[in-house]
Length: 558
Image (cartoon, rainbow, N blue to C red):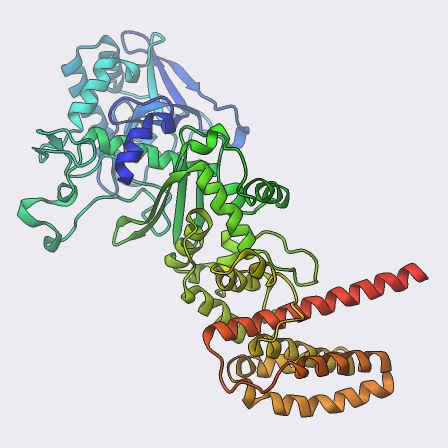
């Protein structure tokens, strides 16, 4: 289904469709020749970018898949192939292979321009490279103002030359045509997939006998014709190369497209969401009473890719409409909405930031975490408890150098806990809910207040009781809170003597929480541990907000 849709949309995704086995690549140099093959000079082509980084002019040139093998591209290649220079690995053999290929093309096409190139290559001494030429530059030829690579006969020769003699006739799984040649190796490798080969990774390939039944080897296990292989391969590479059509996080990359609504991209909401755009989205799509815009009915597609075993792996596939994707995004930002660490309104978070809050570094993030987060954002799928477990566990084991419950971690917890709740109940989880009588939530609040007592009594303290007791307090409250309350008495007594207003405020807060808490639970379930984390975070944020407001009030009075 994915390959069929890419094949169908390929021309609109790529733009101008190149000839078979041609691709748009930068060409930096032209060898200018007369019709008899006499060298006129070098012509440097420019893309108009900064001089030191100019790769050359983009044009359609023959391409071929190669790794360590010697495989020239017809009439357009690097200095090592075209001139036999600036290459540390077999430049003579590469150049001879290039000359032999041009000779075959000249014999087959009988084109004067190709024969002129062959005469030039057969001359006793080839010209020295121009100043500024580099090993990876692409060179092609111009003969009396004509580019041989643009001639139809050259393009037809290249298509025939690159066809695989091992191909078998059958039905293509993508286009459905019957009795056509099917590729043993798909012509286009997919580039830019995390964990894949730098030169590109095959999306269909079998590399062991166990996968090659009935004599079907390599890509023949999923029979696809060359035309389809080129179309969906180039379309996928175009999506992966454009900044506004793919999202890469850890081992996964998502590509998005909508050919009928090219102006819509979810990346502005998934990568680093703009608060103003999110606010506009929420006001338009949260009421459920909007009028559908024309683009909202357009089809929207997304697919997730990673690499494993030398092949591209499709991890996820989404087929919906632009309007449905926008509605899902609005719901996503409502779910993750939680007050910021200082009590101010929380900013919207991107997928990468939320995923990274669950792990120490981005390289640790597995593909399924990204998939679940993006699916929830674009398709309203439910986040699993495994995501909640990661957020809770990370809060419990994080070191003293970072907050136990960060804003992004709290957003993940709130999103999972509120996804099945009515809208009003979900909103109650955005900030401190002083009326909640949930024991787990109250225990989290109480730990935050006891930490404030310690900080007020011992200014400048580096390690608080949270660093030592957060894990046990959030999983087995009854085992630690008795001791924590006894320890707090000495700090409260100190505050009573040195800062009586703070003493009364904190003592009142502790009593208020304990009044709603009949007993400390012996153990807490996963969701209760998550509520503990949220209660702790909400109380800390509310305390910071109160402190900021008091400071501002005192400043205004002065």
